[in-house]
Image 1 (cartoon, rainbow, N blue to C red):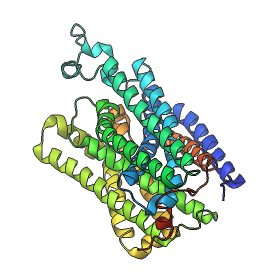
Image 2 (cartoon, rainbow, N blue to C red; image 1 turned 30 degrees about the vertical axis):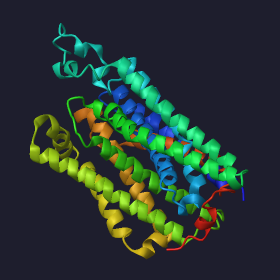
Image 3 (tube, rainbow, N blue to C red; image 1 turned 135 degrees about the vertical axis):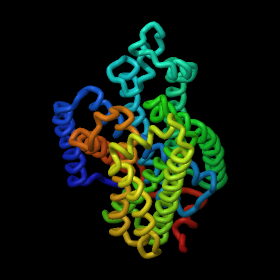
Amino acid sequence: MNFTISKRASTLTLALIIIGLVLAVIGVAGDHTDHRQYSWAAFYTNALFFFFIALGTLFFYALNHVTETAWTVLVKRVYEAIATYLPWGALAVLVVLVAGSMGLHHIFPWMDGRVLDAGDPDHYDGHIAHISSYLNKPFFWFRALLILGVFVFFTRWFRKHSIQMDGETGDTLVRSHWKNYNRSVVFIVCFAFFSSVLAWDWVMSIDPHWHSALFGWYVFGGMWCSAMITAVIFVLYLKGKGYLPQVNANHLQDMGKWVFAVSFLWSYLYFEQFLLIWYSDVPEEAAYYFGRLNHHPWLTWVTFFANFALPMVLLMSRDAKRSPKYLIFVGVLIFIGHWLDTVQMIMPSSLALHFERIGILEIGFFALFLGVFIRMVLTAFTKAPLTVVAHPFLEESVHHHI
């Protein structure tokens, strides 16, 4: 059965986009100490959040190929559709990076050439000058374009090759399967390195005086968990509309297990990073949490407990992972929790004490990006059958039982 976007879904996504635009415009015109910096930071927070969802989904998609996981075959097209947002998400992120390079905002203070001018004592920063061999525009852009180029290439190749496999049989299908396997191995190797570099360059360098050896893993844990939650919500939406009839409670339970497990991975990395920095008490490292706990304690603790306690308490039982309504409810809560995590990574570092609370600007851009994201994923559903036609593990996935 081919997917068709309903009038209700089309209206809802359009409404989200319009509401988001209106709120964003109102927020930009609001009472902020630095309108331009605040607006760019709010835009970047949401651009990065939804880009991370697509990237985390692409990672899990490739991981299933490498591990030759059978049960995910029936929901494979859902992962592909979510990942198709990645090139557009990358474009939104690039807009912010280009604007920073042009001096339109100062989210990345090291991009301001004055911080390297020892003859300008009002702006010179010795620490940034010391690390300028890594944090400089030419090298930064080389890394950014290489990373995005690799990710966009694999996104398009996986999708194209998956659709081509629908018309294959016999030995040709098996060869295509192993081609997927080999490409996925290459992608996982690239992702293992590039995901950490991306976290250093695009998030940690917002506060170039702060460093954490665990930060790349922490960002990875968040993007992976957000991707798992998003996939569950879309699968349940499709099931509710009468699509994916062969996806049963056993598949839902396994998807719920992944949300449960990856939530614990994120929680471990979050708390481990906090604990190591807090007990070592190195000023350059402790400043990150010191500022957040003193000025935004509610955001720090709500983020942690929403993404740790909620999955632990609400998704522990077998029945909880097999209930569509329950999974959607919990999934939405955790989805919002990881959006809060992205907010607390970006906004305090970009705005320091000028960031007081989440307001209409952040919510407006969230609604705007959410509307565009949902619309693009739903459109991707219409471009190919929702269930793969040919795959070596298709029958095993259909009869999956735990």
